[in-house]
Length: 256
Image 1 (cartoon, one colour):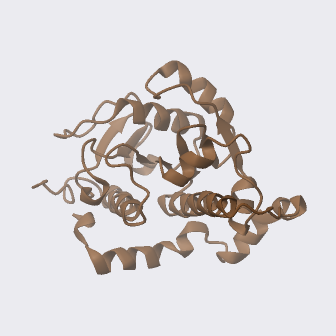
Image 2 (cartoon, one colour; image 1 turned 30 degrees about the horizontal axis):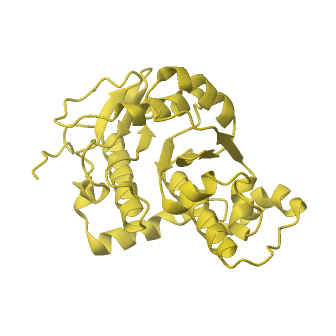
């Protein structure tokens, strides 16, 4: 599939954001979190690129995540109108969720949403995320839940989703999947890596059938500082360069 490069059409700052978001899509596919073409990752363009306008990058609907490139990403406004012409459509249901989060959370540089088996399985459990692993403590420190209302294509759901999310960075969409909010693409990816592993560990632990040991609640309260120490205060930026190197060893076409 030929997709004309936008590298000389957009600013250097937008191009870097496009490359990082395309890399994020490829990594989500690589780690097995994709659901054919049906989930989404969005990135907000900074004011230095879009001025007072609210512009976002989102996936071209219908492409597999391992096909997505920097130039194929679709640039839209907050009403889902294309800012740059693209032959690809945007999923309206996906944009309802993402636009709701970006609207309510100016700090959201990236919103990442998945439908993984482990994520949906835990979202269907009445107890939700259990404090049974180190990974779960990072999630529980900033976790919210949103009840399932059907496929999210109705704008009237947005205020309820926004209210449920509040200031949390991890959102469990009941009977649906996982969503994370990050100030950067790197932060969002690391958050989802932690959220997904939390759910996989929980399902694995429960499958053993034995009694589970829960983490002391006091540990959860101090986990933010623990994460800061673990990443040297860099958050997702600590792991992101190594992830890009991993991707580059496999296929550099995401950055085209």
